[in-house]
Amino acid sequence: MDIQALIFDCDGTLTDSMPVHYLAWRATLSRYGVALDEDRFYALGGMPTDKIVAMLAAEQGIPLDPVAIAQEKEADFLRSLHLIEPIAPVIGALHAHRGRLKLAVASGGWRNVVERQLRQIGIFDHFAAIVTAEDTERHKPEPDVFLEAARRLDIPAVACRVYEDSDLGIEAARRAGMTWVDVRLWYTPRRVTTS
Image (cartoon, rainbow, N blue to C red):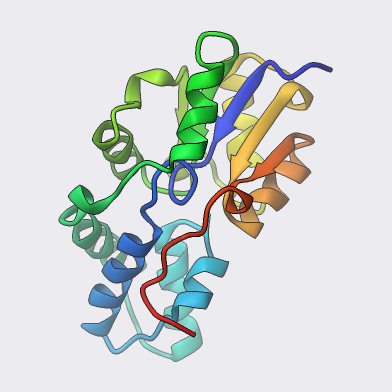
């Protein structure tokens, strides 16, 4: 089946926001004595913030309110929103197909954070659907966020192509029966720490 829709992840795919997110994670978690190294942070790409907090708290034996800490982390991120930039090759693909294919965003991020990023880089109005962590019960690597985007676009899953920057997201696209593009082949993500 021909591709009829493109579905984009947001963080690390449309926006070069991952280093800014990592700095926000470090700032927030350091206030509670919780550790998260950058490699692990990237491996968790696509997982909602509150789920990451709950997992880290359980692993490190530190009692935390996942929702409250997640809100604190996102507030730390939004204070640095001016630092994010668009990822040029992905934005180029978006513009090349705008008006020809249906477009959506499907992210593990929270709606207000995703929408503010899309506005920040001037592409909020490009999408027929925006699906975020609040819209599905299960999250990447489960396919639900991509399947919900396809449903909202009224396009069969097999006619959708996903643009992603994380292993969890690519697995979610595969489980959804969609083709995918790994945008990490197009650019090198900035790092905060060096190995």
